Image (cartoon, rainbow, N blue to C red; front, side, top):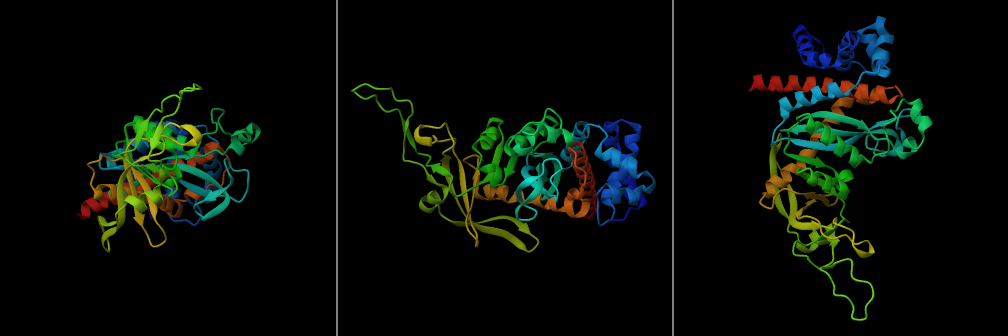
Length: 398
């Protein structure tokens, strides 16, 4: 997009609260230039090309601002949360948990290891950022990007020191990073009706239970082999043997759990469900939706888990195979409500793609923890500005 007088005035207004949170006068000069460099056309949007386009005489200062200056991201992240909530927050909004990979050729960039890279669809050297995206009516605004640090890094303090990783950073699985970030954005006042996540997070019982403990509604993907109980499952404590011996510790459960796939085969009935109107007509699909109790309670004998809280098990029949999900919407929820929640997850993928293609999220060439998170935050701020422009244009067009 090419800057115009009205466009740049709008950017100045958008950035003002961020600059107030940034504080330092010198940083208030470089931040708008870097965001502008992310927004205007350019093949590469790493520090050097951005500087050459917006401030060719100040390349070193802009590089320092992004890569090594010790300004804290938290105050600006709070402003971003407030801005996003003003535009999209409310009970009809979704908070989408996902991650996005940044491919890397070397091994020195902070957090890079050989792992699954969604951008390439295979195992590759990459960094992985855990993301939170606020979305409503298919309009997404990313509000959190946190680097996942593999154990290969957190167990090597010397390597972390070289990449300027803070001493407080230790290994946390992605699901724990996501829960911590959910706590942060809620404390900042972000409002949403439910949390959505794919199977990468949904297969984790601790993640689902963490959401439930926080009083949140959620809809998450799972794999077909995860075990389910029927809602009429029976638990009882067996009586002690007459011959003595150790007292019984674990209850008996009947009937035994079966995989989600087998449960659907036995109890599911596929029906056509429409969830919204698309540009090419009504979007619909074939779904089986049944009430279950996942086998994610306390571990009993022989590794068998007891029944958890009742939820909805959803199976979508696709041409390339069935897709399974769990949803903890109330028992009174309609099929359309359940499916509509699940189908809102795609908005975060759209946001990730746009941030990479339009704003250069994956173009950062620095190696440090602080530089990567500075770049990621400034990219989200730039993306939020674009969404504000789009929402404003749609409002006037209507």
